[in-house]
Amino acid sequence: MSASIFIDGEAGTTGLEIRERLEARSDLELILLGDRRRDVAARREALNGADAVILCLPDDAAKEAVAMIENPAVRVIDASTAYRVDPAWTYGFAEMAPGQREKIAGATRVSNPGCYPTGFIGLVRPLVSAGIIPAGWPVTVNAVSGYSGGGKAMIAEFEAGGAGAFRAYGLSLKHKHVPEMTLHTGLERPVLFAPAVAAYRQGMLVEVPLQLGALPGSPSVEVVHGALAEAYADCRFVEVVELEESEAMTGIDPEGLNGTNRMRLHVFGDRAVEQVRLVALLDNLGKGASGAAVQNLNLMLGLDEGVGLN
Image (tube, rainbow, N blue to C red; front, top):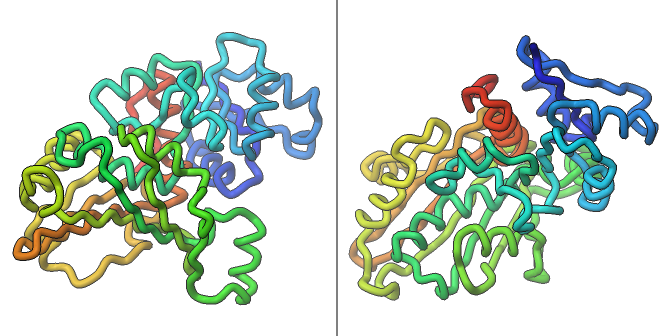
């Protein structure tokens, strides 16, 4: 029998991407409300009648939807920020740590990671776990995303041509992703996050600069790369690029993995001055949103994690 799936918020950017990834699959049956999607009674019925629910809603609306679910058998994936630091929810980054896939597979409540945090956690958590970056270390992350991650208003602004080529934001240093980034890397002090958006639709780069000579033991470029390579050695969707390949590069296209659920991690190093730039490339609507949600759904349904993904 096929599993029934309800996407609450299917008309939004992430919801549309998830629906596109699921609707061609014969092993799933989508519950579609169409014009009734704002009908509270119809939503309640769908939320309680599906085998799995994917919430693609603003935080408050996601919390309201969760409160409407009374059927204990329903499995929920929430794509908002509402539950990403909630200990009652399982964090849905399958490659984050050993055993994380199994936790997701056994969970009934999974919080889908944010796009920026996926890149940052992917780069930093293995280094904190290995003791290369101390938990109390001050860490900075710079990132740029396509405008599709900013919601309907931002999409309309950029596509109308009035937004400019590049915009730094989050200038209050209180971006909503900071608690998620800090908690799930194991860091003890808030991350300094410097996000930006540029005039292209999707794709992102997340960068963490490190002064290796200031870190305890002055770890080498090779040690940093080795810790990342070991952490993701058996991962289908996360690749650590060989040092030689990264060293031969002169730039990275932020749109390079668009349409995929993959993430590529680079270590760019200058051994003479003991510095590295750690860079993650991913699609903010793929591994950073809809792709991760589908991967989590597959795990929660007991399927191969890669079904319907590339």
